[in-house]
Image: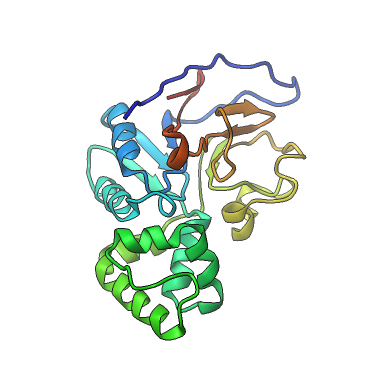
Length: 246
């Protein structure tokens, strides 16, 4: 499996928007979507002792969501690295399923939930299954995950920030301070996120929206390069000197 590394020079920006100025160096990993093979390679590229932020959507679509979740959970417990995973909309849908939201189950199953269930050994359900089948799948999934992994998943934060650089899953309301963002905007995105630049000078590193190449533009750093189909899992290396991509 190829691990593609591209370094982009710092682009020209509007004079009115300040340069990224994190208080610490960190690495942000884009949407994994069940590609544990690429995640494993990405983690190997990050030096020991580094701070790593995963932007969410660890699960669904790819075939190895259980393995990716377990790898990140285990890595987060190691003293040699600081690893923080953010809540993505796919994790949110999975938790809604676990909490019995049958009305939302079809959407999750159609958008990669079936692959996630399969990775945990749950194969007796389809997107149009009966309530009884869904309840059985839910119980089997909870047992396969185990309490520790489920509690870790439920405790994932919605954002992380260092200096004037914030990391979220999908986007943010450009009119609100980062500490006042509604969960929906961070997890599912906001209609004005790509249209209206922030006025507070905060850069937003995000995934969720697949792009052909990672980019830095008008206060946004996009790093979801569709790993589950493109074989390219992007990592942003953010430092006070600039941002590069692996």
